[in-house]
Image (tube, rainbow, N blue to C red; front, side, top):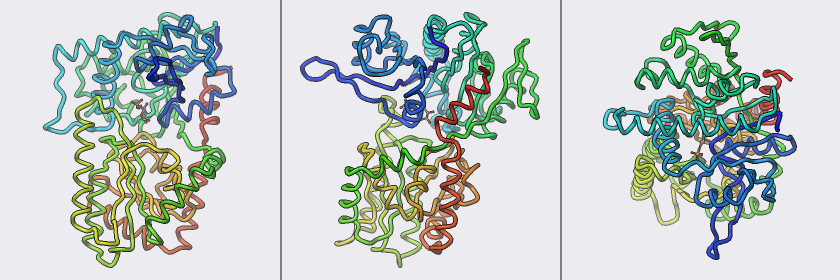
Length: 475
Ligand code: G6P
């Protein structure tokens, strides 16, 4: 039985079948997972996660009770849930990633607006089943009075389900995404909107990355449930239960990041990049190819900047890293193609014999990203909407003289806004102007801003972020 438990869709490890049929284990990817892996490394925390692939399912079947640590894997305590693939697919792809992600990032537009029909109802049932599987496993594993930290939009129903099973537990939920305002959130069917909100209100504590997202959640609870919201105390009372609202702006462990970024593989990527770009200035962006990251408008802004400022031709290179993401969804495949088309236009319009204005990399390579950060003169982070955006925090840590062009809709803008050049992510011309301003920002001004950006980015590293939330739940 465990006294601290963590639950998230993606776990700290994943498995693949090698050609000879054996299983190979890899550390899990993604920002949230790598942050959390750091946090639980030396603590006795049981991590409950889902099997995401056939490799994961094979590993679970070989592990007693789904406990990977007890099957001899070097993982720390991990229980992986073997949820039936079709249920998992509907819960993860159709509900979590195609619906909840789209709602909270305001991603629907007219040609792509949702239709909640009988098919969606079936997908919703899978989402309920998936959340119930987590609640059941957590109820089985938790010691009396244990603290349970449930993560993200995949698991909004689990807190309330778990409370019914185990009222003795202290439960926290944390949203790593933005939260939509009530007028947008209410495009969901009324019963489903209510179930999502009451799911989270089953927790004793609901955490958000910024005051803005916390406030939107409180507005939704008030407007759609008629819950009693106390904005001064940051509490929500609903059906006799009180949920405290916490704001915990996740930051970066600067020392650990520098240690990784000083390794030889990063240094050799830097040398190769320098060889390729010479002494030209570098505008860098690093993202998953994700609709909310607004990569197409970012590239269009660079194109506009090159049109407006021919004096920069041959003197600047845009390094755009856009890693593959969620390719099971057609919207993401189409978006990847749109990014590539836009990059090609820039190439066709501006490339010369000895100047490549844009280097687009679409394959994931962490060491190469770290090299790009270290060499950046300008970092462009322009999401339509983002829970936090850790790229905006990692860049200034690794590139002390780098100017940051940052979307005002990223959660990170709350802490970094006064030292970044803030942009409206839809305003391509405004972003093009900001790129020019960033490139021409005087050295002394960059250094001053850089020092303050670094301080803000490292203010709440993952360990402290997690410890604060545990402490808020009580001992
Ligand atoms: C980003 C988001 C997280 C989310 C994760 C899921 O990191 O900020 O809120 O949990 O993506 O990504 P995945 O690849 O697991 O769908």
